[in-house]
Length: 358
Image (cartoon, rainbow, N blue to C red; front, side):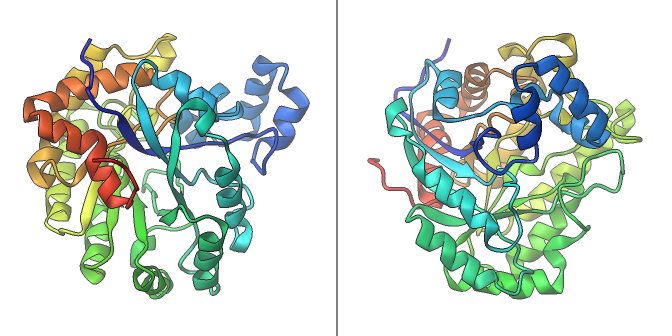
């Protein structure tokens, strides 16, 4: 197995605890937490199918995912710093989102030999108190670096929509609020589905001084299999998804303030169904599946604007994290040791302005 001779910086992990924080499943886990099979059946009765298909499995989402769980998933790799990215905190309106920043700030990463390097919180630029909410995040933690506001909305109603409307990033109220983010020199994590990439490109053009990173290479839904009602159901559809993703990602990469995360590529929403076989993908399978995506991303972004990120535990149904890291090392090693160091460590430190030793 390939090893790294430096410590990883992981700029995209999620932490949650449905037992002790506001969480959409808080009541359920408190009532049925000792009975996971029953809990799973209840969730499948009350939650929409597109969400369940997006999660793949429910058990990991219903359990706490905390520093000790992440550390166990990464072993034997050495991770120095992590960036927590907002995880759909249940009190998500108005100033409620600041509660997540407060909570993350209090988690003891140091006990696990980890450092919390930065926090990417959330807030809606359409909120009339958006500027005050950003300031509240800053007051809550010196590690606050920026926000993510998800815009993932698919025209196929069978694909889960993480946003209340299409075209969020071109909404006039959103753009007006975004001016405050730009003025405060905060970063923006953009996440949308691949057919929405042009919206990130337009946003980046309007705010050329703002650091923007596209999460999960913009998640080409159905690239690896059928998703929703009519997405990725045939080889022709999947080829068209890949071709359009390539073209739109190349156009986005022309904006030099935009970076990208090599992350989330084993989520069920891309069409991976390893979890239905009661197994995770092997290293070889992941290398075979993902190499064309990685090669194209490096072609258009270069190695200085790409960063590995785990997105754990969201990819957990289809991949073990240490296997995923091994697979990415294999895919990225041909670009040289300097590129490997950049994409597994330095680029994330630069983007999120982390205090580390070079």
